[in-house]
Length: 461
Image (cartoon, rainbow, N blue to C red; front, side, top):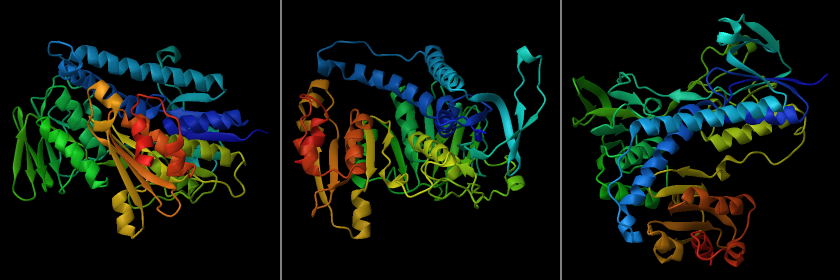
C-alpha cells in the first residue's frame, strides 16, 4: 500500500512536501485553513513585496531627471494598490492549488488537529456548495508534517486595535496612508515597512532598541541602510526600547523605557513572531514543544515522534520561505525512505536572505563580523557599484558587493550585497558558497557586460 502522508498547513513547507511526496508515490492529504501558499501568499512575503514594488516605482519617478526624463510626481492609488495586492495573492494561491490537485494531492480547506500518533481530525471549512458546514472526519497517516507557520508577536504592553495600532498583517494596504507612522522593531520586517511607507509618502519614525538597525547583520550593511533612511527623511530613535502604547483620538504615543515618548498617527508592531502550535493536538500524539512553543526537530526535521515532522516557522529554524520549502522537500524524501543513509543535509548557514528596502540588501554564508568574533582568518574584498557601468546607466550607483573568502584556499565563504537587484545578485554568491567555489572561479567567469553582476566578478579578482 502507498504511504499515507498527512500535512497540516499549506505554506511553502507544506506545499513543497505535498508535491514531492505525491511525485514519489505517496497518498497525500493537505489541510489548509486560509489560502494555499499560506501566510507567505496571504499576509507576508507576497503582499509586502507587491507594495514595496509600487514604492520602488515611485522612487524611479523621483530619479527620472537623472535618466533624462521629466515626469510629474507619482501619487499612489490605494484602491488600485489594494486590488493589485489581492489579485497577486489570489492568482498565486489558485495556481498552486491547481498544481497540487493535478498531482493527485487531496486538498482540504479547513483545520486539523492530531488525535493520536497516527491520526488527525479534519474539520472542513463551510462552503456554499456543500450547504454549510461539513462534518469533521478522521484521517489516518503513516507520516505527518506539521507546517502551520507563525503569527505576529504582540507584547503584553501593546493593545492592537487594527485601526491606529497595527501588526504587519493589517497593513496591506491601510485604508489611508499614515500621516506619521511609528514603527517598533528594527529587524528585517521593520525596516521593510519603514521603506514601504516612506516611499508611499508617510513620515516615518523607527524605534531602534539597540544602536544600529538590523542588529543581526553586518554593521557596514546596516550603516548603509541607516544612511539611506536618514537621507530620505526617516527619523531613527536609537537605544529606545518601547514599553507602552497610549492612544488619544487620532494620535498614538509610544512610551520608551528611558522616558522618551514618540507620537504619531499610527503605530506598527514588527517585533517578531510566535509559532502557531496551539490547538494542534500535539499532546495527543506525544509531540513535544520547547518553551517558545516551537517543535524542536533534528536534521531530518523529525520531532521527538520520528514519523511526525515539523517544518517552516513552526520548526524554529530560519524563518524564510525558501528554507521552509527546502525543509518540506527533505521531509517528503525522508518520509518516503530516500534518506535512510548519510546524505547532504540542509545547511541553514548557507541560506541566502534578502531585505527589500531601497537599496536592497542580501547576504549569504559567513559574515565579516561573525568571522572576527570566531577569530577566523578571512579575506574581505569589496567593490562599490559607483564604478559599475550598469549601475551608472540605471542611475542608481548606491551600495557595494562584499565577498568573504578563505585566504589559504580562496574558497568563497560568504558575501553581502547592498544595491539595486541585490536579492537577485546574491544567488551567484549563494551558488559559490554551496558548491565551495573559489574566488578564482568567479573572477574567471565571463559575465555579461554591462551588468550589475560584474561587481561580483570584480570583487572576486
